[in-house]
Image (cartoon, rainbow, N blue to C red; front, side):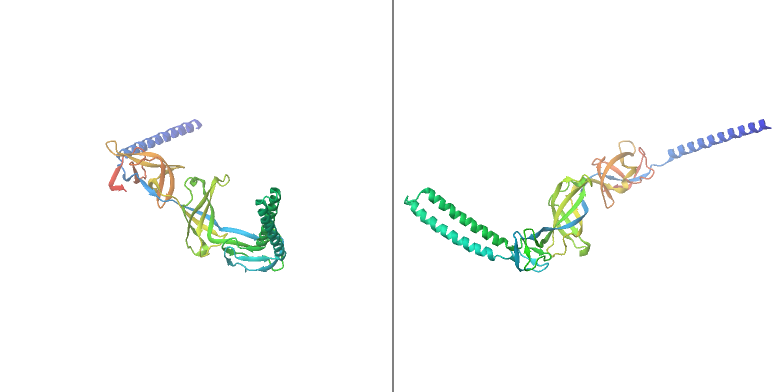
Length: 358
């Protein structure tokens, strides 16, 4: 009984193998026949050409005052009067704080008297020198005394000037940090001042654009605080180094802000318009991919019937349904733009009527 079961199972296995081979053979011959009978797919094509491309880069930037300093005292002296209010707009040279100069005024009068005396003595010796009554040495000594007196007077005038703290440029002051009677020392901060008629904008862009960035390129800045109002300007400088950490390049722009709607420190959305370039641009639907590789089908009309050839390409910027091709295509070639489904390298194709795109 056991031997009969084994023989029976052996024949069953052989029968199954034969059936499987028969099915595979029929399927392969069926596919082969179908392939032979498959009509050439209908496709649309376009001729490769160069177009003028406008590239706009996006970034996030920070507003910085065009000019910004801490206004400080350079001398040790007490405050006599304050001539500004918090956050006041001032002009260059406008007096802000007056320090005590009573002692310097007295020193100035004494220095003026000394200078007058030395000048009078110098003129007297100058006359005597012409008559050869006085020696050249005495004449030179008196000239030195006169110049020394003038230098001392100039130093006193400089101290008096430094005791009058003025605005270094047109701008908006910060919070007042001094009061009348306060003793200021060198480095004591009186207030701050910012020139915000123009604002500098600091931002970064990927290193791949480093060769396309240059001063005077147009920029547009927007802030959520101003409801999308555009502020126009241009690139002021491009840092010559690329960050080894972020692989980005730092850029500084400058924009008009005469209405003072923007404030230093604000976050701004930046658009940078690069110079127009001549590039090859194709519809995105003409591009196919295998992993990270991209390719298109190029039309070959050299034979009796048109066929297609797969060409790998290097792509660039994408914009509005089109994509830049950096390498892999030549001007004048025709590529397939529609009908790519089930299209293979070497397939024969039929170009649809009116199927060439511009």
